[in-house]
Image (cartoon, rainbow, N blue to C red):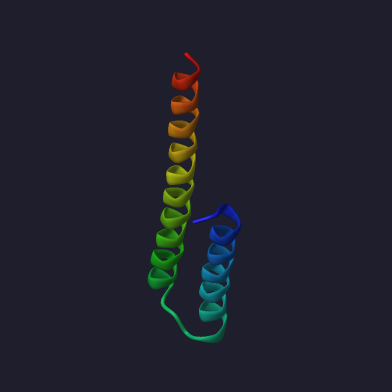
Length: 65
């Protein structure tokens, strides 16, 4: 998944959570659970992206030697 597409998905998820919290009587606990699960998704996505870039960098560096 590209970084641009990932950011668009993350914005959509956060906007949906905000709409749900404003337009309905959601329990605070459920709102926090949704928010934290979204944060976990975002951090996991960035972790995978940077890990992939690190592996690419390491393999390019190994090829140069």
